[in-house]
Amino acid sequence: MDDIINQTEGEESGISRRKFVTLGAVGAGIAASYGLFGCSSGASASGSTGASANSTAASSTSSAASASASASASASASAKQEISFKDQNDYDVTVSVPCDRMVVLQHHSLDMLCQLGAQDKIVGIVDSWQKNLGDYMKDVFPGIEKLPTPGGLQEWNVEQIAALNPDVVIAASQAPEDAMQQIRDLGIPVVVVSLRGEGKQAEAQNPRLADADAAYTEGCEWAVKTLGKLSGKNDTAEEIWNFCLDSRDIVDKAVGDISDDARVKVAVLANGIAYGNDKYVGCQLLRSGAVNAAALAGVQGNTDYNAEMVATWNPEAIITQDRYPDDYKTITTDPQYAELAAVKDGKVIEAPYWTKPWGNPDTDSIALGELWLAHTFYPEKVTAQQVEEKAKNFYEWFYGIPFTGSVK
Image (tube, rainbow, N blue to C red; front, side, top):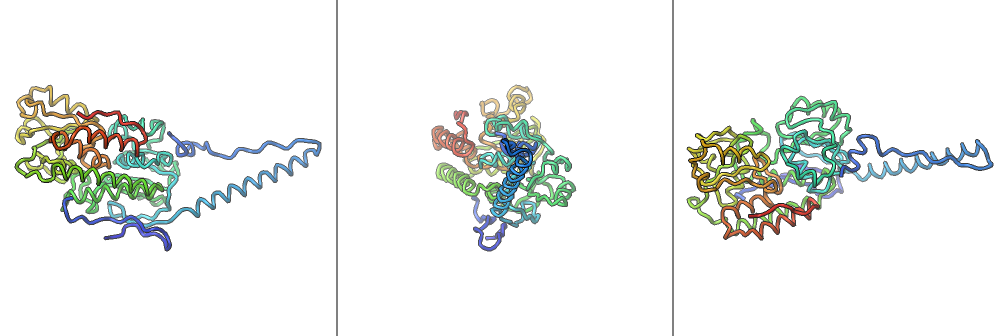
C-alpha cells in the first residue's frame, strides 16, 4: 500500500491510496469572508472615579480580551497538523489541517463536503454548481447561492480566490495550470480531485485507464477520505465509504453473476454527449448487470451523439440525467429517434439526481446509483424497498435532510 499522506511523528496514520487487483447554512465561512466575526469593544466603566479610572478599566479590559484572543488563536494553531501527500494529478501538497476556509472549484468535492457536514468551512464555490449538481444543493447547503464563485472547472479568477483568504483550494483535473501555480505561489495549497486513480491523464475528460473500475473505486475513496482529512471530518468520511461498500455488496450478491451475453445493453446520454470507454458510468453499468453500448462500439471517453450514431449502437435502454432534461425530451419526442428499440419499448429512463450516473463518480453514485440501476434493470433481484431504504438512510445520515425522491 502506497502512503499518500505523511503526517508528523506521533500523529494518527494518514490516508493511503489502494491498489485494486480485482474489478471491484451559510455559516462561519461566508460570515468570516465578509468580516462579520470581529471582536466588539467593551462598554466604558462609569462612576465617580472619572476619566482616568475609565481609561484604566478600558485598558485592562482590552488587554484581557487581547490575551484571550491570542490564547484562542494559539490553541487553534496547535490543534492543526501539517500533512503532505500527492493529489490525483500527482502534485505534491503540504497543508495544515483541519482547514477552516476552503474554496471548492470542483463540484463532486463540493457535494462530498456537504455529505461530510463541512458546509461552514466553505467560503467560495465553483460557478457551475447548480447546473452540474442540481437544485437539491440548496436544501443540503442553505444559503449556497450567496457564496462567492471565483472560478469554474477550467477558468479561475486568481485575485478573487486570494481575496477569500483560503487555507486550501480544491481544483478539478481540468483546472488552469497557470492559475493553480499563481495560487501556490501565494502560499495557498491547491488539491486536484479527479475522482480516479492512475494519476494525471493527458486528456482530463477522456482518460485512458488500465483498469477503469479499480481506478474509479480507488479515486472516489481517496477523494472522500482526503476531503474528510482536510475538513476534520475523518470519521464521517469512513462512515460514508463503508456505506458505499455495503451497497456494492448488495448489488454484487444480486446481479454479480449475470453472464456477459445476458446483460442489458445501455447507452448513457447527457448534455449532448455519450459516455464511452474509461468513464465511470460504464463501470456503474457493469456493476449493476448491464453493459455500455457506446463502449462496445469503440467510443473512447466522451463524444457528441446524434440519432444516427445511437441507432448503430442499438441499445436496449437509454439512460439520461434529470440535471440535463433536454436529452430526455429530444430522444422521446424527436422523430429521428422514434425507430430506436429503446424508444419504442419505453426504455428511455431519466435518472434522478440522487443516482448520479456520471463520467466521474460521487459517493452516492456508488452508494445509491449502482443500486438503483440494478433495480431498474432487474427489479426482481433488487427491490424498490431496498433502494428507498438506502436512499433515506444516506440522506438522513450524511446530507442531514429527508429523502424526497421516489423509487419506481
